[in-house]
Image 1 (cartoon, rainbow, N blue to C red):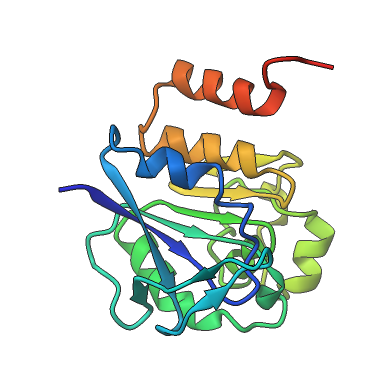
Image 2: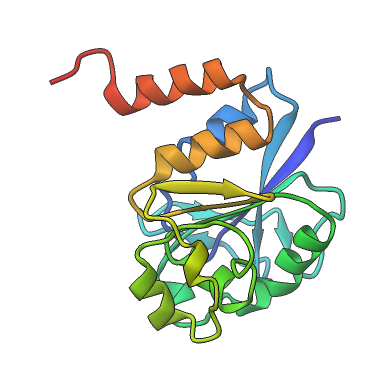
Length: 192
C-alpha cells in the first residue's frame, strides 16, 4: 500500500508551490500517493482557480501519513489556517516530516517549530513581523530552501528547491536523480 503525503489546501492557496512535487510523488513508480487536507470538507479554490475537494479534514486525517506539506497563501497572514496546528503537532511529535513554504513558514515560526532548527522563509524581518512568538532568528538562513531535523522550509520563490528537498527527505529519488530532476526543471533543455 502506498504511503500518503498530505497537502494542506485552503481557499486561495498558492497552487504553484506544490505543483512540481505532487506529480513526482504521485508517480506510479514511487511509494507515495498525494492526498489533500483542509480545515473542512468543502471544496477549496486555489489562487489559480483550481477547485479541489479535500480528501481529509483536520478532524479526520489518517494517523499513518508520511509527509505534511503546508502550501503558502495569504490566509496564513490572516490567521485563517490556525486550526491545522493539531495536525502539525501530531506530525512533529511522531517524527513525520513537515514542509512549509512561503507564508506557511510564518505559521511554523509563530508556533515554535522553527526555534531549534535551521530554516528559511520570505525574509527574517518579514517572519518576525508575522510571528511575534518567533525566537529562532539565529537559525534563519538566507537560502531558497532548508531541511533540518525533519522540517523543510522555503521562501515563496523556491518551489523547485522545496520540491528537491522533499524528494530527498522521502527518498523518492537518489541524490543524483534529484539533482538531475532539479537541473532539468530549473534550466530546461536550452540555457539562455
